[in-house]
Length: 453
Image 1 (tube, rainbow, N blue to C red):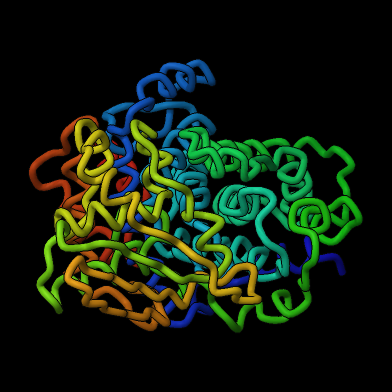
Image 2 (tube, rainbow, N blue to C red):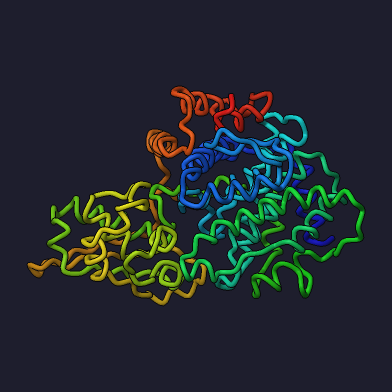
């Protein structure tokens, strides 16, 4: 059997009843978190232009979150995926370094609309199997990033979830995987340069997932070795990999249960530095002006992803992925918020000056995908020096957010909807997701998140 066979078996044979309680509960948590983040992303600069372009991709049918608008299914999957990742605030599987829900949930809810409805239990099962595939591909990699894995690996998980909700059979899902390989896209160049095209790379793969499921119905002869072939996904996009342990784990290890929140609206790689700055400042009571220097020692991936130098007028996409700027903002304000990456906050000279005294250095960790440990050292102008080490980042499953913290993040996200939601929309969404496994039709989620109810 090929890897596509085994992924298709898992995606289509798994029943909702097969899911352990922790997988069901975590699916609910991250569906709500993802909807909130996607709603907040509706007001990010550039969104109106993307909406104008996407509106030409077909007749409106599927809600766009936070916008009181509908687009065609592929276009809505594109916009909702872009909105979910454009603030670096969506959850991820840390070991895989894959933000699987950003591609998967928009494609899955678009598929539910295309089908004419789907139950909440069906959505939860689709999320669980799709995350297993997306995160599994990331876990199989033994190489550092060459392509933007949240988009490329995430697209295959999105394809599986959408195919399940659309009722595709196994041969059709295998063909859909082949169509997805033909469309998989997104390099690390946008990340390196801090370009706002970066979140669009997830959006392209979410749109492709919906299209792959439709194209699979045409009966084209499709490549079989989609994942393991000499020019299949893993060899072409990842390089060195070990897929067999991932395939053997299907149905045993539920990757949605291993998901991490993002408690701060910045690249996950910055979160050790953010928490360290907050902890040390709270513990020792120094002001930002007292800090002579801040040094962060972290695995090579952290340096690669967020060790970039602070730059004046760099823009939000660059700055969210700049450890130095983000840590400086935390020391000045005592926190980091969505509003810190918008408007005048990005132009603050005091933040830039302090950021230039923050360094990020490698600890030579041999794991190319490691995000921790991270060590933060603050040296004051008085000569005092304070250290804090993070072995496991906040909001990892081992240090999960409380329900109150999770809901506070969700409610804050709603404040940034491009079209303000109804006064009770947040409460209704929370209640709806709480009983998601009993919800008759998940189209109600899209309508409410899109402010169309």
